[in-house]
Length: 297
Image (tube, rainbow, N blue to C red):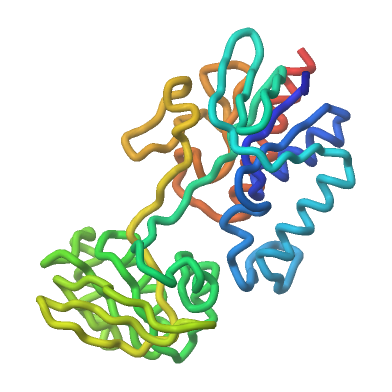
């Protein structure tokens, strides 16, 4: 019987484990894929306080080592089901785990285009977060895929320092707010390409170009970087029958607390306005403090 099980080893889950273990609690992290979550795929992070520049994998490894050195148990096992009675039972691929409290820190995933070579080039020309990786493309040519608010905001941000932005949308119009539409159409270095889809991604070790189908005709665009902005998929299915989920799939909470007194939520799977590493770390702290208050009662 653990004091706390944390599902997810991203910055939120790892931060929570550090606080809990320093309070002498018995903590288990379950992670189905890789340590660090989305953070681990970023080639360079320059907006984490106290660290001038660090790769996402190195920052993830530092967090992992800190948690591990404190004695946090970490199992590479996918949590398949959560059962709630007077305590928590998590059924994994290879074992069943029990705890007095639970922190859901499963994060979210960026939607992909579903093309060959796409996942291989993430961090090598293909990105999702302009705030994280946009600065690498100063005076270069980039593409933004999507036409909603997030895509247009990303294109606007990039247009301030890149040479050219291709904004590629599969619909006949951009679907962003009118104010954003007015701003993007006034940008001289932004070319809006409508009714177009990316058909091929070219590049071995790094992105070189993309082939788009524009109204039935194929066209090759030579670009240095591409930002995919077609939405996020919150990883909340495991608790969809237990916790309130909004229309977008995010878990609804009150400062990381849920309607179950011993279940907490942290990180990008939670309904909130900003999704950055620093916010995930803050969530991890709040969730850990909530779990500690519950356990200490």
